[in-house]
Amino acid sequence: MSVLQATALDAGYRSDSPVVRGIDLSVDRGEIVALLGPNGAGKTTLLETLSGLLPRLGGAVSVDGNPVRPGDPRAAVRAGLVLVPDDRALFRGLTCEQNLRLAVGSYRRADVAAGLAQAREWFPALDKRMKVAAGQVSGGEQQMLAIARALLQRPKVLLIDELSMGLAPVIVESILPVLRGVAASEGTAIVLVEQHVRLALDVADRAVVLVHGNIAFECPATELAADLGRLESAYLGTSAPA
Image 1 (tube, rainbow, N blue to C red):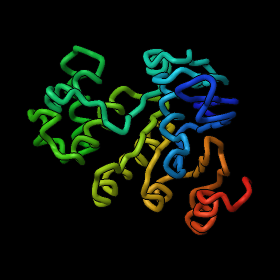
Image 2: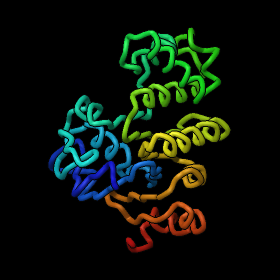
Image 3: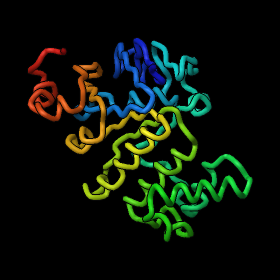
Image 4: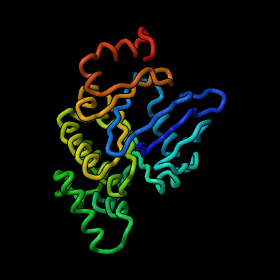
């Protein structure tokens, strides 16, 4: 059953010029979807609209069958939809531990301790950085912190925009198995925007290719990984949507 359902979604910064038009997107529980497309395709706009950071110009979004109020990020989080934006949106002046404590959503010592332990389990590199300000750790550690903070909110749907921005591939390769594990163990649905196509397809179940604000095609990730020429054709506009 689909945990995330977007139907006939129009999105953009101006009502007279939507960037994303008529998008139908569904993501199943425990499924990882790689959202691919060239620069300007509307990937970030789509994620920001799903998460309520941008007003919805048309269409509907639901999580577990429950409608999500448009343009309201708090309502999206309450529904179980959490975004890790491309700038990571960390409280840079707070320590890594303080950032994580805010995500736990409980003041009980046992809950906080369990949350911090879980973050260390996901990302051992954070263990020695807990007392360091988030703005002072490396880019890779910041991304780990941002994802751990999002996961501690126990989302039903996790949206990650530009996971590898500014990071070495080896760092990305250490993060992706964590996402795969969380999807499998927690049933979290994940939509991942990633510029390193092969890395994204290695971890994803399905690929959705967005071009000029429309879904050009979608298919199993393994199928697209075996025929990357299809992706290039879609980017260049030399193939018809499937």
